[in-house]
Length: 319
Image (cartoon, rainbow, N blue to C red; front, side, top):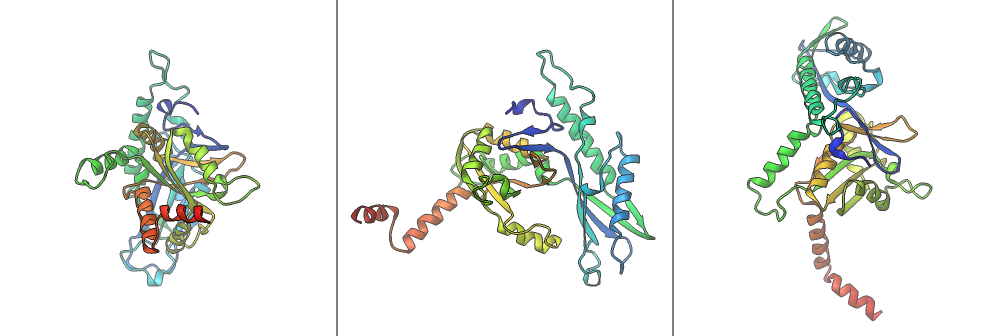
């Protein structure tokens, strides 16, 4: 795998097992009606066309977004909607970011691209994009709506990094370690982390191979993410099916490897070679001590049933 220090935010990154991290900008959309009562559901097609036209005409450089990269989830029952609740929410993805680098990336004296300059250009452009889109009014079939736009917290790497730095710097004396070291990934297809022709369930071995390309791993947990499916049922009508996605928790031995991995996954989607499907996962860092609590729960279970792991060893020896 290529050096992560040379990776610009507009570039894709090939990792192991035919997987790639594909650059993109994700915007979270919330649509409110400007009139108190709305009886007719918002026209999804007109909303998408309005957003596409706005990005072409009001953003410089202009941005082209296909309809399939705008996801709209309408309120289930407008009659039961409270006046302050939105009529719809969704996501917009800008996946073609090549214009940010121009024809060729600039060169340093030593021949490396000035990644810092590209990062600043990207962050400034993204900030202006959010500012221009947030608060615009849309007139759809004679009904006026107001659009709220925010950047997902996990896509703002510097903000996330500041969050974990402040977490360990202030007021957490119970934490043994003094630096963040564990990333949490949700919403990636289980079959992408499974052993081919063996099982559709995520494999610890395959997952370890993929993430060890970012650095040495001290602890790893991968499991089907049933809670993600339940959350989806409640929030967006069940677009995600329980059991088809997995949750991955990776603890790195070195802090720098953790930082590089978080930065690589931030602001990107995952794609499998040979498929057009892109997994727009959830990325967070562990602040609850996942592996420490798991070990503690295991110890408590052993105590509750009246024996320890040493008792088990002695029992096996006698047998």
